[in-house]
Length: 414
Ligand code: ATP
Ligand code: MG
Image 1 (cartoon, rainbow, N blue to C red):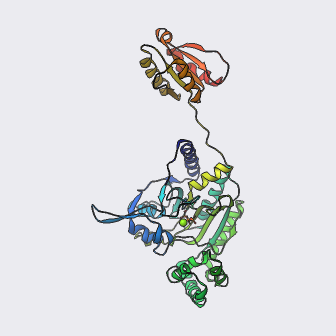
Image 2 (cartoon, helix red, strand yellow; image 1 turned 90 degrees about the vertical axis):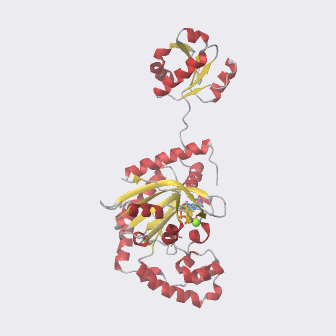
Image 3 (cartoon, rainbow, N blue to C red; image 1 turned 30 degrees about the vertical axis):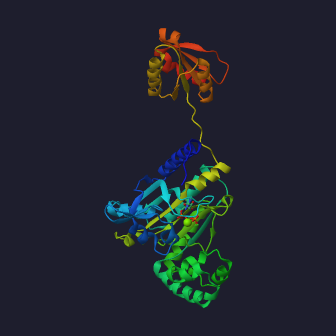
C-alpha cells in the first residue's frame, strides 16, 4: 500500500476528472459503496475457487458484533448488492460508474499492489450485445483521449452456465486423462474451477489444454448470435480485437462476453482493464433476475502508461504569492488573500515571516505568476504592489479596492 505524494496525487486527480467527464458523455451515473462488506458477499459473487477469494482477501472478524468483514477486492459485487438493496432497477436499467481503492493481499511487484484503485462501469438491466459493445468502445475512446497507444483488446465468449456445464463435463474428462501432466494448481482447479485451468501459465499444462475440447463448440444459437453481434458493432466502430478462446477471467460471475485490454509496455502485469457480462449475478446475490455487464480498469497501470507516453496533468500554479512585512501588514495581507480567493484567484500567503528578500525567493520558487507585496507603504496607501515574476514587466502599485479586477490583466500579460 502506497502513499501518493503531491506530484502523483495531482496527476490522479486530473485523471479522475477526465474519467468523470468521459462517463458523463455516455450517460453513466456515479455511485459509491462502502470499502467494507460482509465477507459472504464476495464469496458468493466472485466464487470460492478463485484467486481473490482463496488467497487475496483482507478478511477479519469485527469483534464488536462477531461478523466476518472484508475490504472490497473489487466493486461489481458491491454495486449489484446495492442495486438489489435499493431497488435501483425498479424504474428500468441503469448505467453506473465508480472509482476508488480496492484491496487484495497479493505479492507486491511492479503494477501489482495491495491497495490499488479502479474505476469501472456497470450497465445493469441491459441484455443486448450493444451494451457490451458500448462499454468496449468507450474504453477505446478513453485510451485515445488519454493519448495511450498500443492497448490491445482480447475478446471471448464463455456462453451460458448450461453450455459451460456441458463443456465442463467433457473438459474435466479430458484433463483427468492427462492428470499426470497437470501441476498442483491445475489438479486442484480440475474439480473446483476447471475453466481456470485453461489460462494456466505452466507450459506442460498448456500442452494438455491445447488438445482440450473448446467451449466455442458447445455454444447454442443465442450465445453465438450475441457474440457475432458484438463483433459486428466493434468492427463498425473501428475497434480492432483478437478473439482469445483461452480468456476466461478470474471471477466466477461472468457469462457470454469477457474481454481484457492489455499493453505490452507494462511487462508481466499488462492488463489495464477487464470486464464482461454477468447475467446470473443478481439472482446469485438474492435479487430478481437482471442482466448486467461491466468492466474495471486499474488506475495505477494507466498512470504508468501515461507516464510513458500519454497526456500529463496540466499543473495549476498559484496566480500570486502574497508577501507582507512590517507592522500591521499581516492582517492586511491575510484579508486581502481571502478577498482575492473569493474572486477566483489562487493565492498563496507567505507564512513564517523572514526578510523581504527571503520572501521573494519563496515567491519565485512557488511557481506563482505574480508577487503581491504588502509593506508599510502599501498599507498606508491602501494599496498593493504587483510584481510579475516570470517576465521583465516593472512592479506597479495598485489600489487594494481595484486589485481583484486588475489582477486578470496582469495575469494575461504573464
Ligand atoms: P491480474 O491478472 O493482473 O491479476 P485481475 O484479472 O486480477 O488482474 P481484475 O480483477 O480484472 O484483475 O481487475 C481489473 C483491473 O484492475 C486489472 O486489469 C488491473 O489493471 C487492475 N488490478 C487488479 N489487481 C491489481 C493489483 N493488485 N494492483 C494494481 N492493479 C490491479
Ligand atoms: Mg489478480
